[in-house]
Amino acid sequence: MPDPATPPEAGKPRRNPLPALAAIAAIVAAMALAFAWVGGWLTPAKLTPARFVDVIEKANGEVSAGYRRAHAKGLCVAGSFESNGAGVALSKARVFAAGKLPVLGRMSIGGGSPHAADSGGRVRSLSLQLIADDGQEWRTAMNSFPVFMVATAQGFYDLNVASTADPATGKPDPAKMAAFGQAHPEAASFFEWAKTAPWSTSLASTTYNGVNAFRFVDAAGGHRYVRWSMRPQTPFEAMDAEQLKAADPNFLSADLATRLAEGPLRWDLVVTVAGADDPVADPTKAWPEDRQQIVVGTLVVDRTEPQINGACRDINFDPLVLPAGIEASDDPILAARSAIYSVSFNRREHEIGTGKAPDATGQAGNSTGGKP
Image (cartoon, rainbow, N blue to C red):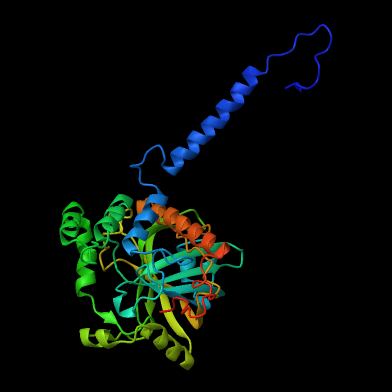
């Protein structure tokens, strides 16, 4: 495009710049529309990751700046993964080659408050980051429940809307929860677990389940669908209602510190292989108990540190950060989790980076760091 400030050569007519300017304006407008569409501004009813995090924040009742919007109370853990080599037959991912590699992770309880009492955390979680010798990374986020609440992102959104506390009572509206249950009968299995499963006395004796299915690809290109769990070597001990009621608000981290003072804690990584007809895109459906299970290695945790300055604080345990040899299934919850985690991560990192999260970074003076 000629410089408008340069006079046209003698005898040549000046080219009309309007068409070029109009084309540039059209491109800019198209980009703005694209951003608006992706952001959901043109479709207010569209379920975007940002809207999803908004409703989680509302359901929490408050925003704890700098903390994760879900599972806000946690602590960092570290140790190693000792692979026994049995996973090589299932997946070409180098994390399954026999040997030992370092692990960073985080243990947490469900909920949006970094200072909640542990006795209120029905869901306990373990997230891990494993980096193999080829530099490829595997992140996984597992929970103590055996099945997920719902089968779709819309269902999970609906659950958060229904479970938002009524300002008049401070508790979820029973009528809204009942309506949710009728609209999402697939949630019955999760609620049954929440109502009847015994509480363990320790994070160390808890089983953590990756309830979403993934596809393992072996060196020959063969594939199979799997789920995995971390099964504790620490014997399970149940808490009764009175013990739970009397427990210290931070009894989980205190227990973990006591146990680690006596030696490392271990969980076996158990891979369950799906049968031909098992649902691989619906995390609310358990697979039959007789499915093939293979112990592919052992997680060894030998230390913890507060999340306010620990290595896990700034890790987004996105379940779709996967090495070659592990692929996502068509489970829609996986994509939803990845997108929601990203928005949550960006919000809290922005709060930390702009100095708006003194409690989450230990600058508040009386921060507990959100440790369990």
